[in-house]
Image (cartoon, rainbow, N blue to C red; front, side):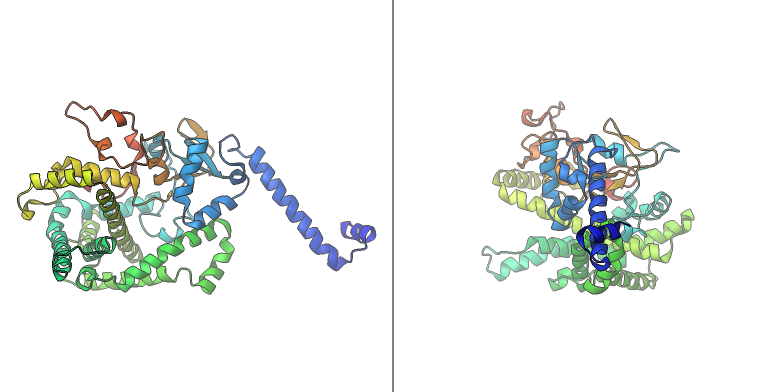
Length: 461
């Protein structure tokens, strides 16, 4: 009837009127969607930019830009510690959010689970598994990160650190001890990937030996570049993801990584001599504790261990090196502490360095200003909702904690844009530097918190 009326009123044919009707319906639906989000949505009272509250487009654009870690902090500075960054998404810089969103729960209490779309590509690892599967996988892997096993692994780790130092010395000597420029980020990555590759796959990637990245590592870096696009596609246009995979080759690096990990695990399992690595620890734990993991879960978790234990460590070291080089006073004090504590290189090990309080403060401050894992790693508010930072949040709400926003919040840290290791030091009487006495140091959680925190967190604290 509407089409006939249009034809009568405007002389439009059926062929012309139908697209117009579809357009008008689309406009009406979009308008109602925006009006609902702004005035009737359960999150309508949370502060934030109106355009971001009205539609997902600003958040999606920010996510795809790769600059989200720098944009979100500005929103928090303007709107406060809780910001509505999308129609159904909240971002937090209140340190209490760490425990309220991700903390341990009493028996019988639900958890704010992982965003199933964000973690879809990690669903067979303990990073993206559901609560039951995560517990099972973590129990099997935990043995490999125990203090006893780490002590057994130390000689293997030390040999790669020694190789790094020797390789850097060789570069300097080739230049007749003149100032030499090296890409220290690459060298840190060479070292950490060789170490974790040996522990997870039974053999290094030989990055230090060849002074270059193994092809699998290049593939890994390429997959990181595609991750944002894949997640955005699953969030907003899931039906187009198969097309993107086929046309743009999205997902191919992930498949290559999985195939390589499976091949390496098979080779490692052929070794009959026991060695203190993660695979050995995993299979021993499986036998002793009765924990069973599928072969797919084993392969995927070892791939996760390689990424989580290598690139993030290299990033933290790179950030620390940058800030130390930019602050000669810090470098001078740090060198004095190390040289005053040790007479020979052989005295330096994973236990003796724990007494270097200033060095640990430098690393803490470096991870505050250059967090190894800056993305939000979103959670979904549990059924029935939850109380977060003193306010009830409806179930299904997406919950973000951006490490960068936490670290650079002026409400959390004095002189937040400046590098000051002193903010992490306490005097013998428990007092702090007056400049940083009100710092909320609990805002920095580079290893996350709760039952899903980094499995190796105890190696740091």
